[in-house]
Image 1: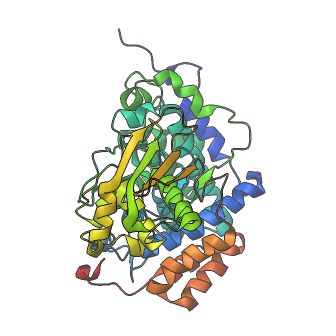
Image 2: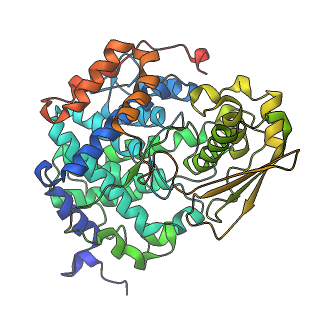
Amino acid sequence: MSKKSASATSVKTLAVKLAEHHAKLSYSRIPEAGRHAMKRLLLDYIGVAIAGSQTESGIIAREFAALQGRAAEATLIGGNGCVPMAAAAFANAISCHSIELDDIDVLALFHFSPPVFSPALAVGEAVGASGKELITALAAGCEVMERVSQAANNDLRNRAFHTTPTCGVFGATAAAAKLLKLTPAKLTSAFGLAGAQASGLMEMYGPSMQKRFNPGPAARNGVTAAHIAKLGFTGADTIFEGERGFLRAFAGREKAGAEIIRKLDKPFELRIEFKPYSCARPIHNAIDCALEIRKKHAPALDQIRSIVVKRHPDWSHYHRNIAPRTYHEAQVSLPYSVAVALIEGNALLAQYTNSKLGNKEIRRLMDLTRIETDAKLPRGVSCHTTMTMLSGERYVSQVDFPKGSIENPMSDDELRGKFENLAVPVIGELRAAQICDAVSRIERCADVGELMRLTTAPARRRGSAR
């Protein structure tokens, strides 16, 4: 005899509890710190997506979205047209994830904005949502995504699943559902339908665009789950803790489901970090070490004998590529990132181009870089770097909290500088300034479509990308 489903008893499932909580979430219930965090992330998202839309992966994603239907519901960021909202969510998520400058959670396991902000802005524009409604949806989506990740990780990642899309689809669904004004029952169904579409593998590194693709389906699937649930399609309310549910399938730990609803009645602190460098977040600590040594000691690069980077076991076996073939691979290569930072004093978009991959000085420093494991380091992303010179002199740096982290944050001015650096070359100074102003007063915006229309730019031909 089969077991009775939780829906057949008086016990509320995790999806029901999560849906009941977020269906009643309102702008007034979000703490001021949470509202400010969403506005900071909104500006960052738009800047990163604008720049990412001009890469080859961003251009192809926009071309694909334009083929998905005639409904002009939502803006393609960095393009010059509107498409169906699910298609816009898909393409904009890929654009945002195409330059390795999107935000990160404190454990460097996932990115909030590609899977959450992309569907929220697309649906918000399609339904004519207000700025307050947008902020509420963004906060709900980010919270749901983090709660699911906390319940599933690190086991989910260690089983080769990519957290950004697998957990992000639930955040995408929550954000879209808020804007579509789903009831608790329909949001419960939407969570079930989101789980049916959860996917994303860590087999994404290499010269291909695979990593850039992953948040696209999550963003699109969140819109699909919320929209079809609104129409009456029902989904499993046991999607999280069920014997064949998300937590057992993706993490093998269905009993950890309590993490999804832990302190659900308390204000949720959104701990979002930002990226000043155009590469994988766990590499940032090593870059900060390199830049600190460069600033303090100005070492003669031709006199370096070795560079030893000690990393925590959580990340020690990642990012070891010493021969990247494309800038995609360079962005997930610690040796490349350390080398280019030492030579050029930064690790922004300009440092990650295919034209630099054959640079002899970069390759020489990559060859001198060795990664070791040190379990005594205090954090998963911690790095301890020792540079040894031919003279025997040694320069040492350890970074536990990289620039942009909660403990070492980027200021509002620094985030605006990052936005302008990314957006101005694509849309111009005037349009960039208008976006900054619109985001700063988003709570007074009557229709988020006004903001989205500012993000357009003439489409580039595919061959011009990076």
